[in-house]
Image (cartoon, rainbow, N blue to C red; front, side, top):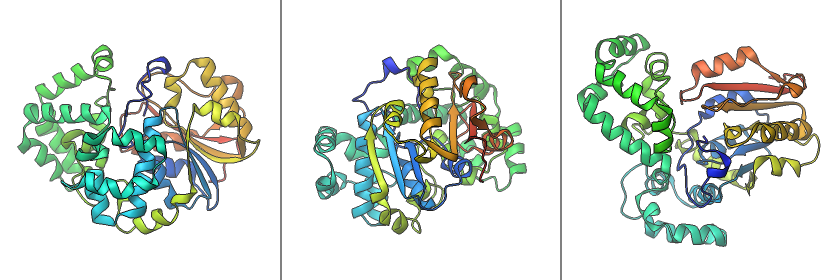
Length: 358
């Protein structure tokens, strides 16, 4: 997720401690085949680690912000060296007062730059790095405000709904209050959102609460409670049964700190199978966006798949490339309908040269 224009990005500031794109959408859009080469946007690193479960041969994790690269370094080291319970505690999923001590065990796996960064961010390590981003700080403030407006009893009631029918009834009968609609209007104000460094994640709240099961939607849980509610409703790399597979494949990740269009410009023709681009074009001008997709088209193997998002700034494949980078319309409609993160205005799937191998 990206929420600032390129000239506003604070390159030494951790914007995201976790990923806010639904990895299930990327997995469905990309249909990754064993041994394929991927490019992902690093962001909070959760999705890069989760996509290892698809058995790619190589993942280039690219981000313009070095802080996000350092986050992936630390999460990678933690996955490599910690057992399941230690990992959950260190990252911040459960309480712990031992995180700084555990960090000492991970120092040897960090680059000099990442080690300097995290040594200077002891407080972020102490409270758990998944909670350390600016966006997560906003989520904590929002959830506390929501707790006052809606009340703990009403929030707990939503998570007791066992079916979509119950969720829909509960939303209409209990949740959709005057206060909730007032909060919706407040947060939908673009100027307010820009001041807070956040985005209008409430625009699609009705779909998230009425059309997607709340029990498995860890994005909604974060927005409402500022935490993961269940050991099972977490990013897939943090599931107990998946940890050994992710750990075994960590060496397939190469961390790259660079603008994506520049990194792609250095790649050979016909060399990349999948592109998970998040909404990075909202950091770019239209000309930069056109350059990015031109490099995607050049570096992609025929039949390569792309997952691309829009949040608020309208960006997309330039018209001159739309015959070469073909929108998968039906799949894209299904992706946005089922996307658990629910904040994005578009989640789109593309195939290069129109060769859909899904």
